[in-house]
Length: 152
Image (cartoon, rainbow, N blue to C red; front, side, top):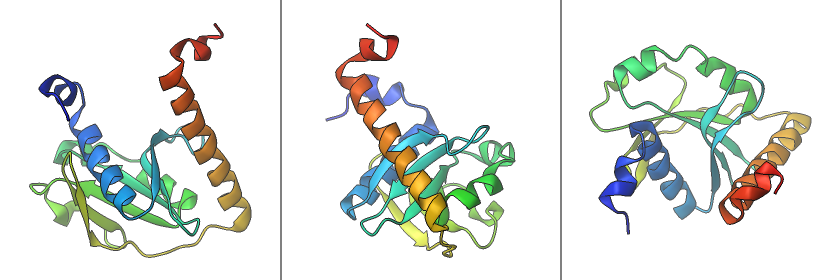
């Protein structure tokens, strides 16, 4: 169970990412947060589906957060589907057409609009699955042995 201290330590976008990850996990997907597909880009949530699908979900906690993000189109070439995750008070009319929409909070999410599919090329998919696996493994190792990342 969450403590108030744990929840206060997370930023609003991280709380949305947690709700998105919980929802996708309930559908059989695996997720990682803050994955770097290429230099200069860092996706909020990358999801790997049961059939190898790759989704990117960008979490926006406010209008200002959305307006300051000029890199989102760069994420499109790294996934099969792209979604925005926002809370129930977000002005969704700001979000670009042709993208998916998820309404989320810290505990769950709901896919409101399915993103159009633009399948990755097999070579790109292989690279992304490897990045996903490496990112997830490093995160787990760091949780189990924080000193390992420092070479202790």
